[in-house]
Length: 496
Image (cartoon, rainbow, N blue to C red):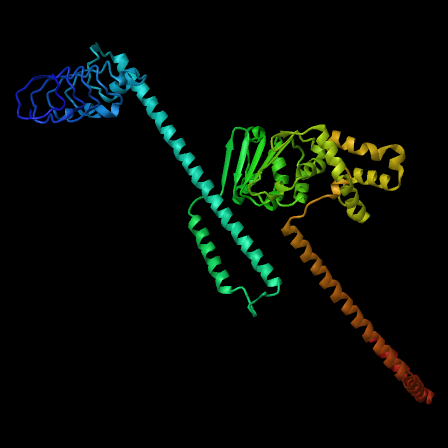
């Protein structure tokens, strides 16, 4: 027959067996009212979904062999049937799945036969265990999905905050530049920056940051042997107590959306916490000048350096890699941005920037140069200054020795980097010293002027004072008896 839809049978409340095998049914529905039905045969149809079977209170046997059922969700209503004890699903796509039997038995505990085979207690137990494992796997998968989504949202939030911060910095720089420059003339009138506009833009940026602060503003993650740090707040993780095992497996540290100047301040902690770290990655860190690479000399080991062009304008410089090779020569870098370093690269770097280190060291006062080295290096530097280095070959061999020992050459050590904050502190310190010196000198000048004034006054008054002193002395000793009595009286008063 060619039946495609079940309909108009709800009144057959006494019907016990319904055989609809070998038809064209696709959905089993409209079974309400068949309260006495105990057996339903739907073999060899095109059934892909079943509905209303759980409303049949007496149904015991359901034959669904050779249909198009591919998912347990399509027959989920069968799990709600308390009377069903025998079911066949062989010949359906679902029967080919590895989880088929375990899933059906787990959801339909009342079954006694599946696909015309009796179900044993061992099969029920195994189905229960397998279903439990599957549930755990799904929960774990769901958890990982949530964690990945949270990570994605957090990174997006960090990226947006970083962009807002960069826009604010660019705006402030632009306003400062406009203040320093003269107002331009447009049609005979001066064009000024309107403070209302800058205030409104600043308010917009502030509100945007506050809106984003609901999400995490930084992220720390360990993936394999890589420690990923997103956002400035992630640097605080270096203050934690890391286990020896975890710290030991970290080989690569990746920085994203963090100002390079802030990274410089934690390099000492980084090399202490993760002694096996040999690869640094930088992305969106505001690396803008070659001299910033000088700060990386503080690390004690480095085999690879990766600087992503995104957010690091320094990569646009043609010679940046050669400068890195020259300044960080003591590390014997193997790769830069994934490209292997050759001996020719090292030679070219030395030829390009060798003179730079020499000029830098020769321009510094000796006391400044000596302050950069330890005691042994100070002696070596003195030796070089006295000209003994050339004679004994110290100067020519210094680079090779330091490279072998993992140390800097004396000339390269003078190429260092000072962060903006540290530079401002130094300027403030210089300003304070200048103010102190100026005040101190002014006080000295004032004191000297007072002394000179007193001296001049004394020179003017001294002749008259001397005459008066002589006159008073002569008057006092003119009468010897009275003078002796006065002296004895003074002596007596002193003893008392």
